Image (cartoon, rainbow over all chains, first blue to last red; front, top):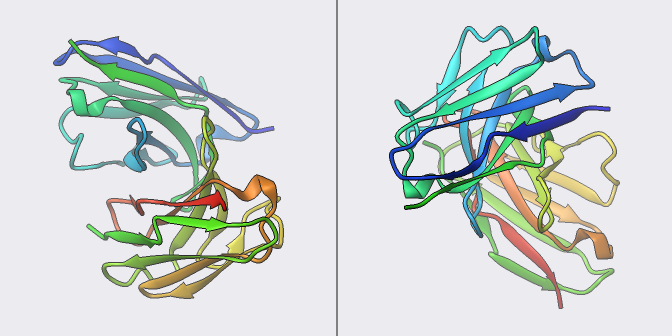
Length: 117
Length: 107
C-alpha cells in the first residue's frame, strides 16, 4: 500500500523558516518524481515544486522561487521542502504527492503551515 | 502560464442525476489534462488522467472527454459519496496548474 506522511508544519512568524518532510512507503521511491502542492484555507490547489526521480532537476512555482528548495533522500524514501522567508500568504496545507507522468496519483494527508505574527 | 477555468463554480444536483463539469485551458494542453476529487478534510484523489483515462479503482460512472482547450468530466449518475469539489490540472507545460474547482453539492 502506498503511503505518504508529511510532517514539519507549524506556526511560524513572517520571515521565518520551516523544513517539511514526507516519508513514503509502498513503492520504489527512487524511480518516481515527487511534488509538493499546497492549499490555502478555503481555497483551491496550487502546485509548488517538483523534483525528478534522481533529484537532478527541480521545478518551482514563481510564487515560491528563490524562497523554497525541494530535495529528496532516496536512501530514506523521504522528500523535503525547505521553506524560507515565509510570508502570510504561504499559509496553507502542504501536500506531498507522488507523480506519474506529472499527474499526482497518490497524496499524503498534508501538513499545515501557518505564517502569522 | 496556462490558466484553467472551471465552470460552473457550483453545481447543485440530486443523487442519481448526471453531472457535467467543464474545464477550459487558456492554450492547448493536448490530452494532458487530469481531474481530481477532493472531499472536506481529505487529500485530493486522482480520477482521470490524459483527458479520458480512469485512474486505478475509479468507478465507471466517472468519464472524461475533450482535447486541446476544452474538457469535460461527466458523472453519469451521482452517488452520495460523489458530492465534493473537483479540480482539473494540466501537465502540458511548466508550471503545472490547477483550475479553481467546481463544487458539486446536494440540491
